[in-house]
Amino acid sequence: MAKALLGYVGGSDPRLLAEMRRLQQRVQDLESELVRIQSENDALSAAAAHHKGESLLDGIDLDVPQAEPALT
Image 1 (spheres, rainbow, N blue to C red):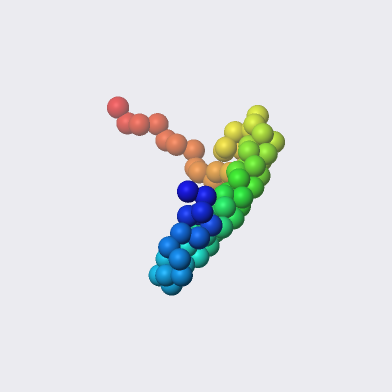
Image 2 (cartoon, rainbow, N blue to C red):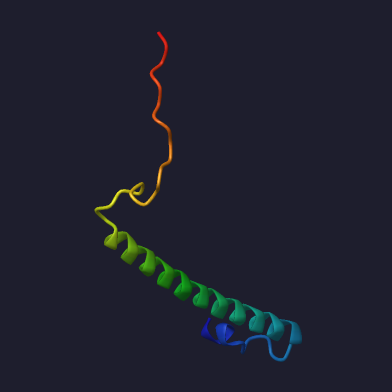
């Protein structure tokens, strides 16, 4: 199995070698994306912890006229 992951199986078949290179690149891309997403998640978690006691509506300026009572 380890030999297959390293690209040793299949001899010098160019299709297998190209597929192995493509898969290795895909793994590297996914690992990079995972690091980026983990970093983004850490930043969001830190921001959420910083604003834990605040309401989501605290920073919104609501310019809504006073509601009128309903007619009965």
